[in-house]
Image (tube, rainbow, N blue to C red; front, side, top):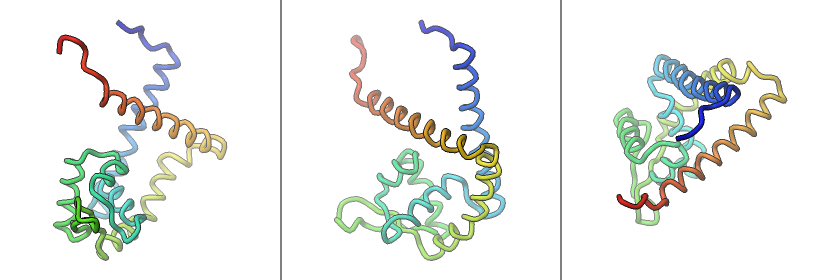
Length: 162
């Protein structure tokens, strides 16, 4: 059995949970209302926008977008239906790439200014410059820790008896 969280740990965890739930929800609502896309769809299209030739292997896109392959596949199917992304065989001949279409590039470019205003209003405007730098450092450290912890869990041996 583990010990309960102390008061500082409880406050820290409560803050993480609040941000993790409220910020994506607020961004989802705004992006859906204004541009007909979810936050995850915006993230996928932004990653493709920044990629060479606006294309990326689906597995890499899932990893960089912090989503599962099945979630990404579902999202790419939706983005294909609306004409913002298409699937193509990878140039290496192995695997499948997602490619941002001209329409998708126009859509994500149109959404970007509004998205950045929302990010600033919801999170960054609540901090001064040193706090923003601290948040960046803490977020990066926690992300690295999370990735390492998940990687360890994926490679861990199951307990004896299983």
